[in-house]
Image (cartoon, rainbow, N blue to C red):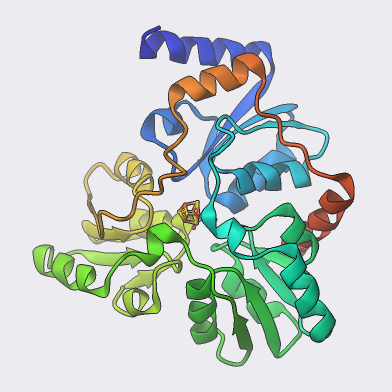
Length: 303
Ligand code: CIZ
Ligand code: SF4
C-alpha cells in the first residue's frame, strides 16, 4: 500500500467507525496532518470529553490515552503502539505517594499529567505544563508536593516563591539533556532569534531563555510575536505546526537531543492497523479510574 492509499484507508475506516484521531504536538508530521485535532495534553483530554465520537484513536504515548479514558470512560480509546510510553511516568509510583500521604497528611500532592492512573488516584490534583503555574498559585496551602518532574518543580519554586514546593527527582530524558551551552551556541549562530523553551528543560537552560512555556504556549508566543526567528527548546515535533502556521518565520531546534523516541514510535501504518483492528484498547481498573478522574477533573474547576 502506498502512503496515499493508506491515508485514504485511514479516512475511510475513521468514517465507517465514526472515530476521531487525536495527535499530540510531538507526533510525526504525517500523523499530525491526518489528525482531527493536534494539541497538548490539556487540549487533547478536553477534546476527548467533548467529542461526540465514541472511538478515539490517540496518537501519542500511554499516559495521554489513559488520561482520555479516565475522563471519558464510555468511549473506546485506542493507543496504536502498545509500548509507546513515557519513561517519566515510571519515576513515581502510587505506593511512594501513599507513604508520603501517611507521613504528611496535610500536604497536598500535585501530579503532572505524565504519571500513571494509579499515581493520579493517590494525588489531590493533576496539572499539565499549560496550567501548572496557575494551579499552584490557587492551591490553598503553603507547601505542596509536586511529582515527578524536578525541572518543572524548580521552575514552579521560582514562579511562585510564596509557596514551598517539595520536589521529586523525575525528569524528561528528552528535555533534561539540553545543555545551557547549546543556548549560547545557537544565540551566536542566530543573533536575531528568541529562545523559547519548555519548563522540562533544566533550570540552567530555562534561565537563559526569553520565554518558558508548554508546547501550546510556545506555539502561541511564536504565532503572536513580531519577531521572525526562534530557537525552539522542546520536542522537535512542535516544529511542524510552528512552520505550518508561520510560513514566513524561521525556527531552529535548540538541541539534537530534542527527539522523544517514544513519541516517534507511532507511524502511519500503526494508525491504519489500530483503526482496522480497533487496537490497543485502553483498560483501567474502575476503582483506580474513578479516583484518578477526580484528580484530573479538579484542574478544570474554576476557583
Ligand atoms: O502537556 C503536554 O502535552 C506535554 C507533554 C508537553 C507540553 O508542553 O505540551
Ligand atoms: Fe515523556 Fe519527555 Fe517524551 Fe514527553 S518528551 S513523552 S515527558 S520522555
